[in-house]
Image (cartoon, rainbow, N blue to C red; front, side, top):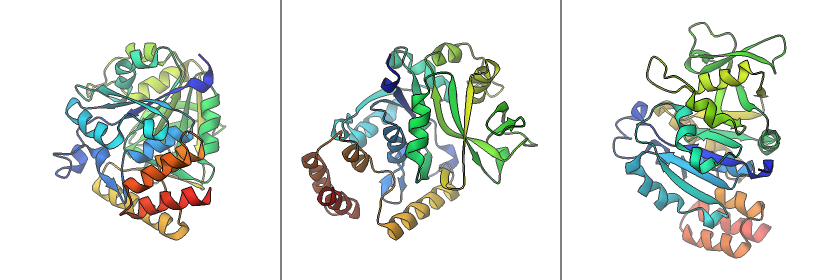
Length: 295
């Protein structure tokens, strides 16, 4: 398969227990981050990478809700497939559930509660998309690395020696962000994983299997980028405030599938105006209307 035909996986499963009680009746990834549903932000990242065939994996009871919010993707010139995750058994489980969808293609997996932002983000994503060999991960410097998967480097900070899952004594301040690009061996590797002590197929184990084969590429995101994991009440509020501040200051929106699809030529002006009219009572609708006039 041509490397430009990489497929995407948006993992929006789990119970959202860290956000209880607000997620007792609603999927976490459908919660708002300021003016958009959380799921818009990771979806936009896959679209920025040029990926148009995307599977969203979620709990069976939530599929109908996601279809109502995202439809089939044709309004953005993409194709959305919905897959059921009967039980949350680890991030790497996504590649067992999505094997038939992928059909041997290369892929990118993003977690549904992750937000990425940066001026050159699209360049980084396209760079990763163009590499169809091995796996590519994105390291991000954090002040609390023990809460994440952490990269242990050699002498060169672009070469990883090990990925450690929530270590008590982190070997670096670089966490593995929730975005992963894989070659077409990933499904077989995922099926060969053994559950961890907590009964899950860990993404860390999957990454380390690539690392042992000398097939793991690390791209460190520098000061000009923002990565937010919005899985707690505090981080959800932080993300909303961040998005509001940037949009208010610059007049440019973050996490807009409509804008991205229009700029990439996947939809035309008439389709964009139709979307603007759908949200005509909101600032988001007015933003889309302005884009249709500017470009």
